[in-house]
Image 1 (spheres, rainbow, N blue to C red):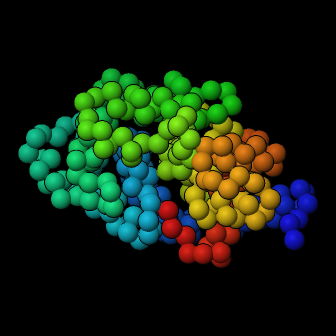
Image 2: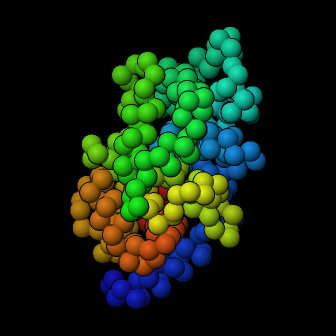
Image 3: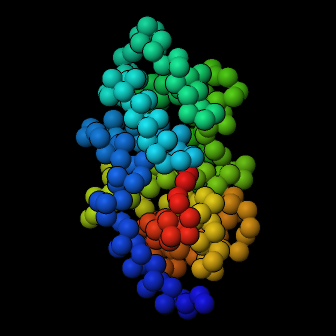
Length: 259
């Protein structure tokens, strides 16, 4: 039986406290950016890790740490100062459908962004609106692929304006924007309010949200994200995306979490 609104909020708040703690880090791809201390290393390693975050979590973490190792565990320095011969050691990288061709495009796109567009944070600061981060994700894709690139690489950046739930970018933005006392999310982007963030929506969180009556839409798409946003903001309009921890935790008991 689904609790009433007050009871559901109390239930979800308790689950946030249960799962939004340092023990969460070693279970999650967020552990990869937690290896770094400089702002640029955190956001670049976080972005690249989020980009390949689908499938088994163990595999994601292994691939992401391997990617960072190929960059000398200094992703910002590598992106800004690499030479052509440095790129040769990346030629065998692959995680599911993200391969070395895509990685090389992402490296060049990130270099252009940090040289010309005030970095990752600068783009999202430019395009975020007062009530949503989704227009900024749309514009980010356009900015990201303003360099020459093969068409195949575009599939690795979602666009909510084309109906995508943009799960991996919403997860990355939670990491960068949301700040809490538990030390899980970084909160290093200070000019975007957590109130505009959207919950990363995948198969498991979508199933849990439907079971709890938070969402009716069957597809896990941009419209479903908006529906879930509307409900979660009723519980906490200043930090709605904290409930991702609750949906994650409940998903663990429902089924082993994948991305």
